[in-house]
Image (tube, rainbow, N blue to C red; front, side, top):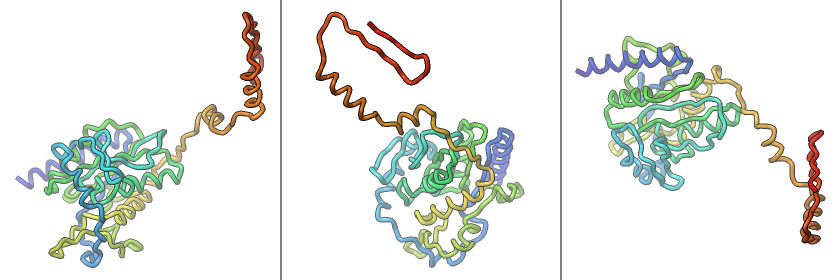
Length: 292
């Protein structure tokens, strides 16, 4: 049964990849549990976040491991519209970068500002790349294959636009006879075994000294965001949003002080009369109004 379900998941992932490619939506996969071990992982234990207990209060706020209920826990974790908040998201953008996966994609063990998505969003902003990063991750249920299938179903229910990007953090997909193109595939073992990231202490080690290399803290999330950016960078469009001209004028031009003085005089010299005359003129040629 497990083999049959794995085969089904691999074939479904292949169909999804082909569909996205045909519709010009880029796709990348990160294996968070393999395929190889992470070097010296038992000596690379994280410093347990002081807010960890508060964060896990959101884990009871989702339904069927697929849809988050809206939730707020101050600056720790916030769910809006079924997605965990990505900070520094731009108001205007050309395309979105969607993240799918279990706890690692959700940003377990980190506040909103320190998830992979939020780190990546800031990198994009700094490089004038008008993309909005969307966190579609949901906490896992302890069964890797089920997690991957649930996230595939969530992905299949997402409406994409041409030029969007998908980053899928998974565990069981693309490990059998079905393979992704090399440039589309990454793995934690590759990321955290490669200098300068091979010394980063960011992994959960439980009380029995058993490592959980798929559970990382904010230092690990920052590393992953940097690696993802470098991988997808060649396919990103330098598409800085140009601010509308009149919006810029309104923001940059301040009211002339002479006009302020004139308005002050008018308020003091106000006259009550049956007939009032006024002349109104703006800076555009031929726009002249005379009101009598």
